[in-house]
Image (cartoon, rainbow, N blue to C red; front, side, top):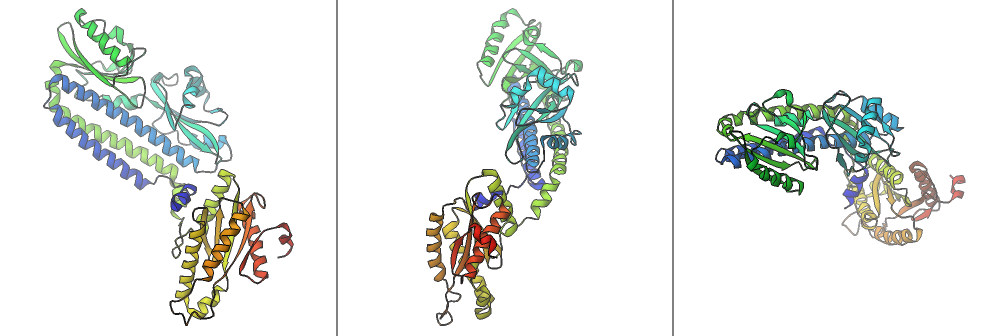
Length: 499
């Protein structure tokens, strides 16, 4: 519980190694799934075979969309960890990465002001993209639309984004639909099999693969495309479309156009609600394509792997600065296993600035610790520090952060400013500390009693920043030492004139 709380205030970005491991796992699972699907398809009837092909295409499109989603979220996480002075600085940072595979990239601040080029702003207004952005939880995806900037089908992805520590906005990335259309295209099927993206409500379709390469990316309506089917099969088509409208995840039917028999099946795209992958295969094509299907799998995996590596390199470039900082940050003290000074300062600063809730900071000194080392040796000194830390953990681990600040100095940040509550804890802690012994030998421990001095300051009553809060607690600690140690004190303004 304690480590999770510390890690919440010391965020770490997704490392390059972790990203590559995750990608390798995904690719390994994909390869295994591909091989299993291939072996199954080879032994299935033509209708079953077309069903598996459709599911395969849908899975890969969903995988591609999910990968784009993860990429956008990772980019937003890296940027959220940086300290930008203004939303304009966020947009400038995003603008420096426009060389990616996306069409456009930008930022919407907490006031819903859009930071984008003039052409991109026109796209937002034309397609009402802002209404999609506010639905991000943490990601939302627009329906495909034809971009006025490129003339090609695109879709825009929105990701939750935090800046200035607590300001909430959205980062957006517009991808060409070709990024997922390419998944549908393959040498194995391009001459005989058609693959569409279809919207259930409007029946509009976007062709992703087919015999006519010039029609790929074109918009049509399914009612026109299916107008030539034999009259006896139209009822079956209407039933098939009704299942799509009702939300059934997959359905197939057979029909004829002239003398050619087709099997047609749809499958829903889970990451693009309302849109479906539709596969139409001439039954005569099934036997000729299976011998080349394995080559298609290998080519697809190679292309996807190359694209993935390129995206990882882009992510790595953006997160290098954060990664270097976090690599230098050692969170725990090696002897006592509590937070070290640097980690504590970072976590405490995040705690105070993020929540703004009342808190209390306590400075602790082990009294006359140097004499313990001189009298009993450094091993005994280490034992005293470990025992003292355990007592701090016993009394404070559920209330806040504990840190060994240096030598025999400890500091605790509590999620409370109640002096009455802390007084009870400190009195109990005092009794525990008095019982600590430096060695196992009672004779050596004779005439020894361990004690501590502590000074406390309240946030925001005494100070409104971490540095001032530490200064106030230090003055209170100094006051205890001046009065003979073995006690504790709260800061009050008169102490500013004592030291």
